[in-house]
View (cartoon, rainbow, N blue to C red):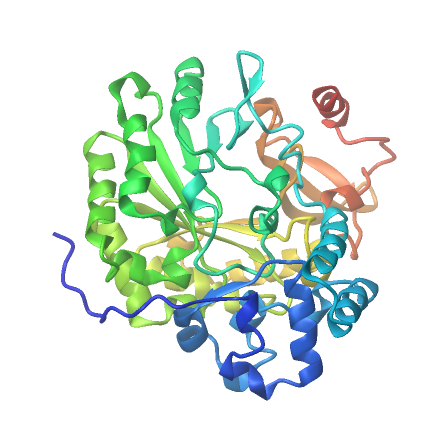
Length: 442
């Protein structure tokens, strides 16, 4: 059905913050760095697995190895004063609840839900908010299945880190799809549903099926595409090859296609090395053989993929393997953003330099794109207009569909890393969408 398996099954060994002290590969690091990593992990979540640790990280290049920086906590992810607070508590042997209390204070200052996720994106049904859902763009509803709100490994930059720190008030999750189905019946303008997390691909195939099958009912024929946001093809490709229910999972993809719907895996590949192993390529092939389209997206992260050669290799490799380059994102304004962020001007240069050497088929990619409160803002270029140097911006998606594609301009700022650090060009007091956005936010 899906072709032969080329890789042997291996046991799934997860690593969490408790393993940071004893993991053999970390013993080459200084004690001070290991203590700092423990302190960061008390605030920002850490999880990895044997595949990431043993096959993706080049331990001879640590601490500068990009996959190590992508998955293991780094000391500078916290401000020096915050790091010192946590380290001093740990050194003094403070009780776990005392450390947890300080961690909660720091987490609250890290903008755990950017871009209006809680305040503006949660839909309502009969006047009641629907738990575990977001509806920001007209055609797309996000659904957070409760059993999919963890990951095979956590990315250190993750803008959804608040899902993983054990605070229920910060977490999006729904135990059943009933509310989603009812909401979709009431909203025929919704054409696609994005299952997200966390990572829905950490769920058993039977659990995922319980959330997907109701969406295939003929009464919901307006839902033409089911999307699944996942890092599993990069961090645990065994999910699609040698896991006990891998074939069942792929059969579910086939059934979605047989029901006349598209199934798209929104795969997060941050670095070419994630596509370099035989099992990663086998997983991608099996996913595609089951009828799913694989669209690839990732943010530009300082110290991980902040050079044009890395992106050009990543995108050209994806096309060669039959996947579709989709988005280069700008690191969101949450969590350790100050540590990972790349100025917009530099991000645009990296994107442009990579884009110039792509094959034509790889030029489906869009970026750099900021997922902001009003919508996905593309940094489309830098120009000189009327004697003023400006960023040329436009919406790829927006809360108001009328904003999409409309160019607008910001004064050039070589240090700005996010939309709220930009100022309108040509003496304007506000960007064209701001007054309407203020009314929505009230």
